[in-house]
Image (cartoon, rainbow, N blue to C red; front, side):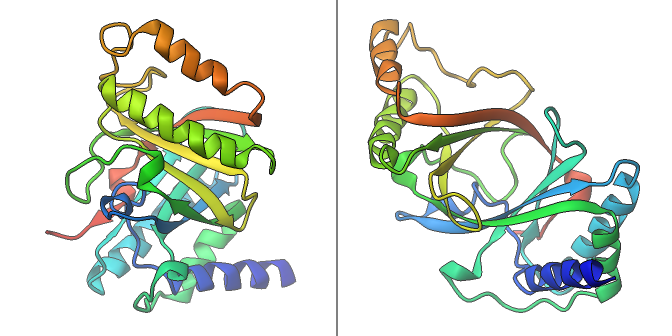
Length: 248
């Protein structure tokens, strides 16, 4: 019972921040760095329907209260499935209006959840490629790459990532968002998001040989050697049926 109460308090604290955004999409339209909350939720096997029904009620409640949007992604491959990613605005980077959420909705979410990790991510447009469009995700799938540096190589990686974004933009990539965890996790972890129409692992619209050339790309990626102590890659699928976007 104590663990349930503690978990509920964590979710209620999260709910107070719920002016939820599509995150790596909207926040990187500004000229400078911005931040978002990223919550990774692992759901108990067999409890997906319960969790999703509660999320539907949560988004409906927020919509009725005039919130802007709430977007949910489901992880398609990898370990610890079923799991979902919720990406939100973060009060660390500016005051947010309160949300009045029925505690029973939070209880239903907590009861169906195995683990829940909340992180604050700083997203810097200098490290990525700014895309356009509105609040709706531009594609159904969100390719997520996790790259972990050591404290000693973090600044080297930031310089490398800036050069990589320039090269990939020249090669045809038109949208890539790059964030680093600043609260709730390892500050040496970087998250790279790109949108795509399918689950392939190739970058959409990128033509290395026909633009920057294979040799130049190889030289860039050879520089990455020794900077990383870990990396992971997976695909998230946007769950439109669980998400909400207000009319613009």
